[in-house]
Length: 267
Image (cartoon, rainbow, N blue to C red; front, side, top):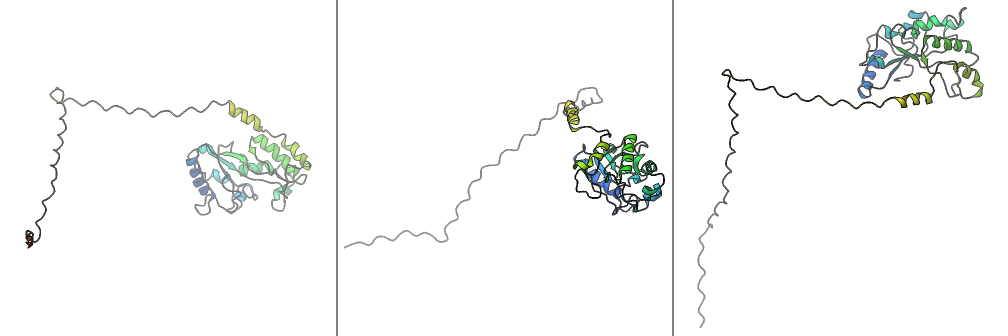
């Protein structure tokens, strides 16, 4: 998951300094070149560029706008590794007028479809809702509608948050969150133990295949006479070793050597 809620980024403008789709492409190529097993999780942008209002008539949450992928797709070496991860919440009606519409919450599925929810069914990418949640009961109606929507569309999700110190959304640890526990208990889920057991039953990965053998060189063609070619010439004999080097003669002394004088005779 490369970056959390790049709300000031753009999508599809051609500016490699602000386009989030271009940055995600570069990061994804770098990651898959080093670990091809990993998923490339890309969150959405915010309201910059007007995508959200042109698509749904309303603004987005930070990180919610991933629909740009339908028009300016993120291209990876393995498209199956791409996961689009929008964020959505249901509080603060002063920011999002759809929360105060007369047909709320039944107006929400169409808005979610426009922004991200219908993309998997349209073959435009895998979507996992990366963040959603809120306080109970303040946003309870919205949360229950989102729970049923995700189940109907078969979209996986991560609920925000586990810790109780997220003051604008609350958490899950404290017993006062039993309403959330009961709501989330209806969502399809795979327990960690079930997942580990499934992985343990998988056959071990087969070793890589050996490289193919190097083919033998083709036989030499016969000459036009039909006779086999003459045997190859033996390699030339190595040159004889150089003669041993003798030290040069010593030069003569610079002056002649005289015999020693005779010893004087004693009386």
